[in-house]
Image (tube, rainbow over all chains, first blue to last red; front, side):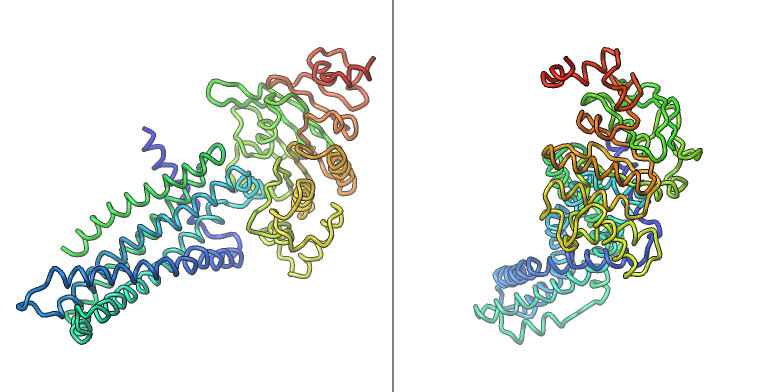
Amino acid sequence: MKILYQIGEYVIIVLQAFKRPDKGFVFRRQLLYDFKRLGVDSISIISIISLFIGAIIAIQMAYNIDSPFIAKSIIGFSTRQMLVLEISPTIICLILAGKVGSRIASEIGTMRITEQIDALRVMGVNPPNYLILPKITAAMIYFPVLIVFSIFLGILGGWIMGSITGLIPSADYILGIRSWFDPFTLTYAMIKTVVFAFIITSVSAYKGYTVKGGSVEVGQASTEAIVVSSILIIFSDLILTQLLLT
Amino acid sequence: MIEVKNISKSFGDQLIVDNISTVFEGGKTNLIIGQSGSGKTVLMKCCIGLYDVDSGEVDFHGRRFSNLPDKKRKHIRQEMGVLFQGGALFDSLNVEENIMFPLNMFTRMSLEEKKERVNFVLENVNLVNTNNKYPAELSGGMIKRVAIARAISLMPKYLFADEPNSGLDPKTAERIDQLLSSLTKKFNMTTVINTHDMNSVLQIGEKICFISQGKLCWEGTKETILKTEKKELNDFVFATELTRRIKR
């Protein structure tokens, strides 16, 4: 019963969030603020992780495809495919669920326990609309940009590592990443990213918005936001893959 | 004038506010007093619409407010200023932006007009040159004053304050009391203050409602409170050795 109650509560809060903002310029200001906090502030961690993951994938591919009968360009091709199809959209979004999700849940949760959300309500402001809608919008617009950036850096990481170690000749790697490219794979990655962005922000905002108690409960809500978002990301990944790639 | 008519509110099996009726008079400082856990805050939250009441209603100048959808309450809410116990200032906004927030949301004032209003209300709460400070940089008393400034920025008809001087030293607490009382007179507001501070009661209580165990036990003024024979109220008013000695 509790899960049904929570799903109902989540739907109500999300529906309240998706109402027309009272003041357009206030919404735009919040949106810019959230672009920075949720998107721009994540660039450094995404860059580091993507570069290293790309490098690791390339080395592992080279190790696995160590045969004179298989062209070295396959390493570049496989690295690109793995990054585009799964690693960047899913793994990076799981990392963002931890970074961005916990930030949203703790920020909104703290606002709840310090009566800032009550202050918004008594002023006649729709709190989910003011607090949650800009976050969802910012993430749904900015996360795809981050993921494209992550794919690029991952491929670059593979190339750098292959060149440094001499495992993959540069020309073969570049030939591989340019071979058999199906633009739909990128569309698939972007669709997944947008869905994951919605899950991360809405679930985390819901967890923060419904906090009752004090700082311990805010920490708990933050952890729950990451756990629930991660499970939903993996679950929706399976469904979207089934729907879009088969 | 705010009319509270037969309000009851319970959480689960626990009845917190039990059939309370009273009138908070316009242009006066109305106090709700009682021990911690007596139901003062719940009564105030019912009045400002943060809790829906189980029965009864709250009228603002004859306009029904309780248990209406948020959309229908919006107009009255914009005539209302609320000072929360901890101030409830928005951490990500500085003092000026905090006070400007309701002006941004509900008025079509130009930026210059809004800045003028911000400075006007800050002067009224005796805070100047703090416009660019963030809540984390302010003392407890300053936070309360900024919160009062934000609450009166739309020139409300009704001002609610939940324990405005809790956690403050006696001198700052007295200043906050005097400030709320003088603003009530200056802007002719209906002010409702929750408190259990007897200094506030004796200084600014033009109308006092005493609540015990969720029930309204006594109503009067600061002049009559010391002469009452009501046992629960006497136990509350003369709870300390000092007050008992003064009474003797």
